[in-house]
Image (cartoon, rainbow, N blue to C red; front, side, top):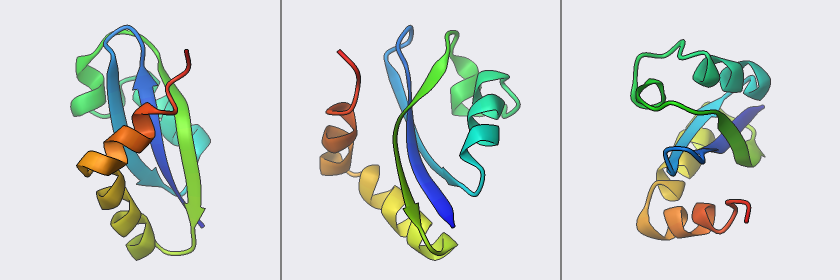
Amino acid sequence: MFSVYAIYNKEADKIYIGQTVNMTERLKQHNNHTFKGYTARFQGKWELIYEESVATRSEALKREKQLKSGNGRLFIRSHIPG
């Protein structure tokens, strides 16, 4: 199973959308700045705000692309806590 997820950094007011096979480990990697990409640029803690499971990587990539669209981002923003 693959997880399509959205994480949020309150301090930077930024969202990141991605996919993984191990959500717990991936969130640790984002918070430890293991990746030198987008999430490493921002101070503050990333927190999981949305997650859904799909069966295959191709489904995960398709859903990730949908969530990165305009309507998908509006949907994800609706999951940001108070």
